[in-house]
Length: 365
Image 1 (cartoon, rainbow, N blue to C red):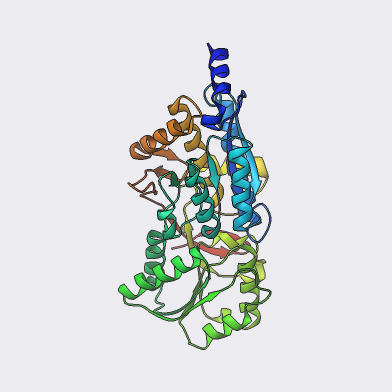
Image 2 (cartoon, rainbow, N blue to C red):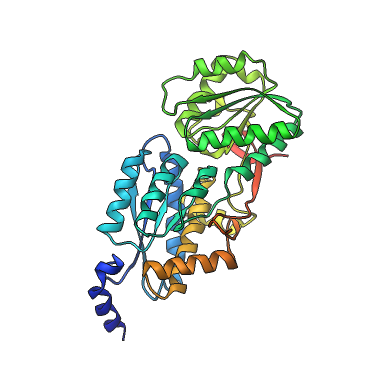
């Protein structure tokens, strides 16, 4: 019977765009090079741990699960080209990706146009909600995270803050949403500075923020950008005032310890008190989490495997139906419960308050 099913699958490859092969194959487009390479590698690690767990338990549909990785290089067109290969050449059942909202949105739009299931493991811009009907988010969006951050900043007594964010879909969402929540809570944003990711210096932007004499600086930054910004803030003497990072793990691994002492911030809660995943990660890689995002990539992979199992095949329409069913029912992973709203977005999201001690991030109230 299994042999017959495979023969039938081979004859319908044009309809399903799936290969006749033993492995169940999914794709992942991640920033494995470029400014977000550390975050992308941490995502890959989370996926690999999930794949090992799944295959050890018997795989998906009785076959091994395989992930084909493609590097976006943090470039939108490169991400789309990678997705095109995964869809048309590799014939994957679904695609996981990406990291930055500015990449995830066009990537997802391409996949929606092709009718391919898209699982977003990391991007939080509010614009993600409008990607389309076959796109689903395994992480909460910025309207939730920025409200958490705004309250945390005010609770620390910082009523006037300067905001710095990258000038893309993610950064614009963070700046706008944080500013709105902060004002509603009684705070004042002295200035909002939108910078270009990948600059060789941020001194001009930092000095502009300083000129407004804020109580604290609130910022968000990708890996290498955040490292450089923290170094230059230190060199300019700006770290005499408090700095607060929204999604702090995005750049922590790229920032030398001497430039981030005492830095405070928040991020998604990447284990939701699940110590077993932390232990598995440290055993496999010999170090602590490099970002918040391995846990979300891990859960995204588990969610993907469960939906294919429920679908009973790698047929994309069947997988989409299974995603909607599981999303409505709810799925529990290491990051907590993943339940999707009518737009396919995660409804509930745990967060945590963090502080840098030495080179490590620790919980901080």
